[in-house]
Image 1: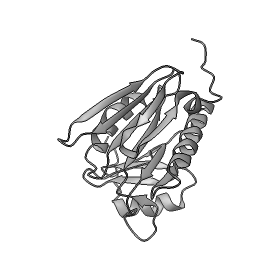
Image 2 (image 1 turned 120 degrees about the vertical axis):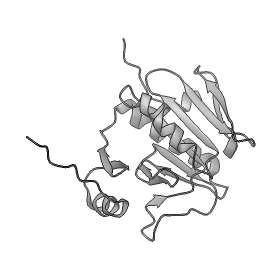
Image 3 (image 1 turned 135 degrees about the vertical axis):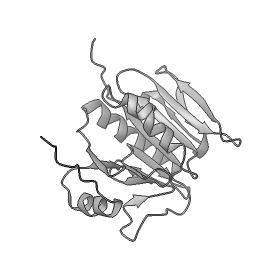
Image 4 (image 1 turned 180 degrees about the vertical axis):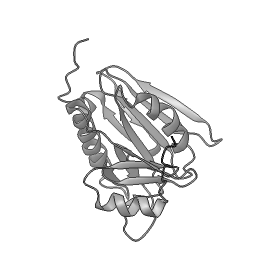
Length: 192
């Protein structure tokens, strides 16, 4: 008995389908991967970070986007939806639909148990290939932890970790500092 051959999508087929879909999917190497809904904690953190960063940047020529803006990693062909995106240059998009950014400055990911390995591994490796990207921020939703990876002039990445509620997380590539108490405002950790 033979199995039916798997059909793969082209990037254009993916974009056509994705623009009509009622849910978001990532795309990589011809395959789509449906994105699951997020927890209350995840959504609170995303809302908090978008609000705080937007407030800090409102007098600067930067734009802050929540998770509905797709980002393309041109070098690898990954289409993904970071939890928050900052662009501090003229935004460049893949096409005239202006829904797929190709030049992010900072990407934020809120980690969950189901996505942490992917976000730290494969996705982070692909993010690092984006020439315009200066910083990747990983935020843990079940404990106080913000990891900021900043690209240095030699191409290496420097980690700054913030792990207590009385500290502030610094996003140095955009000169923004946010108190941990604001990032985690209204977030209640579940007991183990």
